[in-house]
Image (cartoon, rainbow, N blue to C red):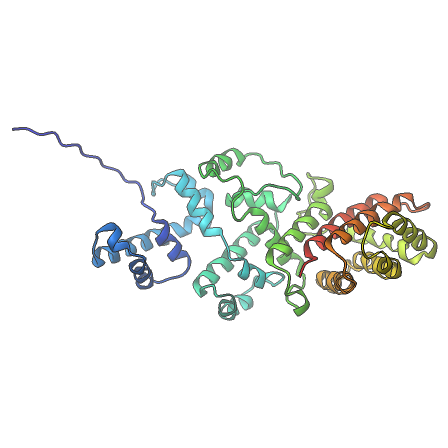
Length: 388
């Protein structure tokens, strides 16, 4: 008596998301097996401990072989050795380059050097991120930085093209024009159905920007600021102050603030050095805000000190030391005095709006375009940073 038997043969590489997460978090095979056991995998799968151990080891070997391809994600798409569906390839890249914000916050403003890497044991203890995961994430930051530091054009676009990282909606960042690899890249992430993933190339662009500019972010008075706060500020500064903000085809990379722009900011000091202009500026702003903000008396009394602080922050950015103190100056000279006087975020927003617009009506002031370009980033930073 004959019988039919259907046989299916395939060579698709299987990816267990739970085991991949455990590998990325830096757990050993034994630790991963123990965690899977506690999670009840034996009961769910009806298997044995020996099979579970073998399965975990097999996955770890696969991930270790895939890691060299994840260092250059386009190679993962082009290789034929591992038959991985596109949606799984996307997941591998997304999870591999995802990072812990607590770790990113610790590394902001630091040089991505061997010395910093030696400090990761302490960083791991402070953040609760496993040491192996810390090292992987540090190496990712350094790899991205090295890949784009000498490239021309917008940082985020370069990162997207080289590492196929997913996009975030560009709400407060200059629109990035994609070309060439964009069609492949868009299809790649389209499989995830994920238009706004939990991390983005903009976050990596912020990390590269801070590594390039070496802003001070570690002082005690800045500890209330999160990685998200600094990332948003970096994106605003790149969007408004970089060479690409005025000329997308510019040769200068967006990781550097153009020296000509920083030199021009000294021209804005006339707003506080010329007594007549300072008095007129104050009169215009106070007239516009009378009855509209809850701290009008405080604004009127402290307008000149606030204006000097806002203008002088920009006027000092040609000096490396003052660039490092950019965020310290904003907190010490603007945010803390406003907090002390009980300004609400709404009060600050209204003030910055009218403070920026008022010089249009100042006779003899000839730097309105420069002023508004400067204040666009300053205002965005202050409004993002103004919280407890």
